[in-house]
Length: 263
Image 1 (cartoon, rainbow, N blue to C red):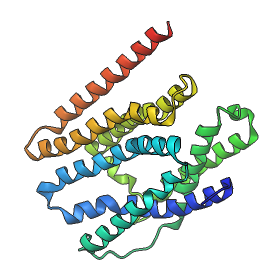
Image 2: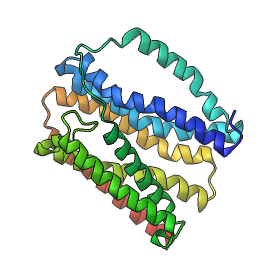
Image 3: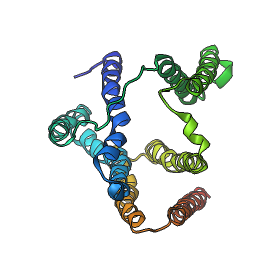
């Protein structure tokens, strides 16, 4: 029902409040609901939804936009949200552990400010000529200062909003680095492909969504399978090496094909 950018931004803010609560509690619910021997499979299924959601969205959204109205990309979430709410109410149980502690408001504020300003810098910097623009320069300074405050804060308080001290564990640190690399490889292409095919090749939204669909379906199916493989004792190192090998092969092949097409 939003017909102005201000209204749309406001309701996206409201949506973000709910989305933040869901993301913060989702994996905690998995850990407290499933026994350890089933946790890998549960995380695999959960990960499949995380990967397939942003990819199925452009397909359905593209079809609705091309054939109906952009408003329907929002309306379609209403019945899905109602079903999810009812299922959550019925099946999600209360936490088995009662925790007490203070909310780290300074940690939350500095993290939100630092990441928010950084996102604006990265998205608008190219358009605004980077540090030649005073607003971009100011936001970059705010981001750096806020993130430094955030790190210092979470390293000192007893119950931080994000406990980065877990990175002292080598396996956790390496896993975080690999996850970061995986995100760059996968989500950069998911973001850039629609821009390329719609801006330079003139594709419509539906065709663009169908381009991304096969990779998402395969990824979603394999994440569940990988969880089952971990339960059966397959080495996570082996699965990680195989996974990154396919990512490298995909990115290299795509680059070669694009170069051949350009020439």
